[in-house]
Amino acid sequence: MRNYRAAMVEPISLPSRERREAVLEEAGYNAFNVASEDVYVDLLTDSGTGTMSRDQWAALMRGDESYAGSRSFGRLEEAVADVMGFPNVVPCHQGRGAENVLYGCLVGEGDVVLNNAHFDTTRAHVANLGGDPVDCPVEGARDPNAPGDFKGNFSLDRARETVAEAGAENVPVVVLTITNNSAAGQPVSVANTREVADFARGIDATFVIDACRFAENAEFVRRREAEFTGDTVAEIAREQLSYADALVMSGKKEGLANVGGFAAVAEEPEGEAADRLFERAKQRGILYEGFPTYGGMAGRDMEAMAVGLREAVEPPYPEARLDQVAAFGDLLADAGLPVYRPVGGHAVYLDAGELFPNVAPDEFPGQTLVRELYREGGVRCVELGSFAFPGADRPELVRLALPRRTYAREHLEHVADAGAAVLDRREAVRGLEIVSEPPVPELRHFSAELRPVE
Ligand SMILES: *Cc1c(COP(=O)(O)O)cnc(C)c1O
Image (cartoon, rainbow, N blue to C red; front, side, top):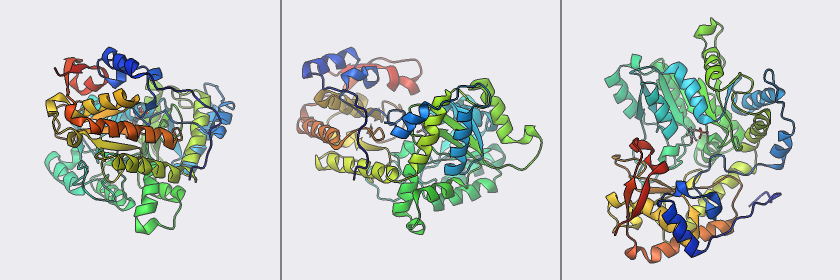
């Protein structure tokens, strides 16, 4: 049941078919080049695109914009301690800022970092520090048809193999990303979290949880992990996070805010400042983000995130969130589209390879589906297949991410109708070829230009 109503509206409209054709051509058939006013339903990302609550808007007005000792930072600190159980907070402008601050203290040249699956910015930061990011997904994580309650889990077998090769002394950090963004938003169990924590302790590595979608993950645990059926999302979230030594967080996800983030460090033994992770992270934060009581955020943004963190673990948010994403998956599947199963926490993924067997991989079935959904319904989504990850052996997935508390069922039905129309004429659909791409192939999906294959 939808337990909120709109208190502020933002007009959107569906451009004419003619206009949509022109937009695609002007954009070089790349959805990142399309202006938002030309989009009807925008499912490009769930990052910073959600709707804030009345209480968050009210909190903005309390923003204390003092450089040092901001009251708003105090409220953020309290929220992180209450909701996540971490007393030491380094505020940052967004999640990748927190990654730079924290991993910059922990990772050096030649080090190996293990992760159930590195999110793009995590991978880029580890590589930028001279480290080697190694993914440890469980079997089936990238298979759209494999069953499993916790396909986001971290594979201990894969991690042990890597450590045996690299040497434990070269693995300073183990990361667990919940939910697993790079594996279709699949959840991670608390049992797996405990095992990963033990494993990290065993090799004397720092155990970091990337907590961007910690509340969605906790709701999955409540539904699927027998030990926790009687518990609340707030209790589960604290339990799951309690195993980590440190967190990175993007406020744009389950801070339910439009911007912001932080790194957080667990209670540490007394000792020299130079030996304490929190102290080192704070110093690095000053260099890259800002003074430790604002870290690149306005005071009002810290207020909004502090309220958002509390809302993220309280009913009705987590339950309504997963229900909406699951219902969207059902709408698309009922329309005949090949949906990644089970549906994850923040998005529905479609398998464009299965949808367009007649479009060769080098004609980018995923980008082709992105183009067709825009052409058909003014819907924007993102390819996460061979175009975004050149050379990687992965399914041709397209992600339809749902902004939090934003779209109604009518919008999602519209997307499903557009998908059904694409399906109807799939035999006639041809792929795309690259016209120009930037020098860094890993970043080409943001700015490359394409054209339809003749
Ligand atoms: C979004 C995200 C980040 C980075 O956060 P930004 O706020 O976009 O910089 C890091 N890790 C995961 C898993 C994410 O989804």
